[in-house]
View 1 (cartoon, rainbow over the protein chains, first blue to last red):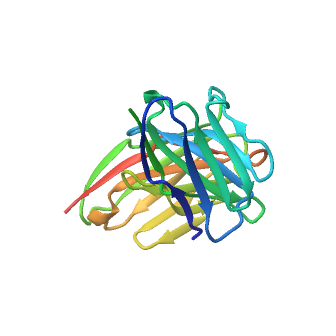
View 2: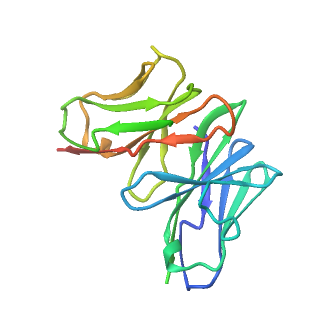
Length: 116
Length: 111
C-alpha cells in the first residue's frame, strides 16, 4: 500500500509558540490531503481538506487562522498550529489520496502535540 | 443526514473465537466504504475498500462484505495481535471525497 509519513511524531512546546507538522506521501502523488484531529478514545475529526496548489477548505468550527495549511507540492502538505495553547494538545493525523487514481485515503502515523 | 454507525462499541473475544463487526450507514449515494485498523498512538492502517453491494474482500483472518445498508468485518479465529480499533468510513459520490467516519469498534482478543 501507499506510504505516508509525518514529522515530527511527537512535539512538546510552550504556550504561545507555533508548531509545524509535515505530511509527505512517499510513493505516490497526492492531489488531495486531509488533516484530522483525534481525541482519546474518539474517532477522527476532519479539520480541513487541501488540494495541491490551492487554498485549503476548512470544516465548520475550525479556525483557519489558527491552523494554517499549505499544500505546495504533490507530495508535501504542512499544518502549522499558530500561537498554540494547551487546548490545542491532541493527536494530529494527515492522510493522502489521489482521486481519479485511488479514492482510498492513506494515513500517516500521526503527531502527538503537547502544549504546556 | 448522512451517518455511519459501528457496533458493538467494544468487543472482547477469546483467541480463536470468530465474530463480526458491523458498520451501518445512511448516506445519499455511496462512492466507497473503507475499513481501517488503528493501533493505540498510531494512524489508521488501510484494510479494504468496497464499492458495490455484494462485494467481498479478504485478507488473512479478515473478510469484509457490503450490502446496500451495511458492511460487516468478519474475523475468523482471531489472535491477540488482531486487537485494535477497527474504523469504518464511507465516501459520497461527489464533491470533496471526504470520509464520514464511524466511531469505531475496540477489539480485544485474549490469549
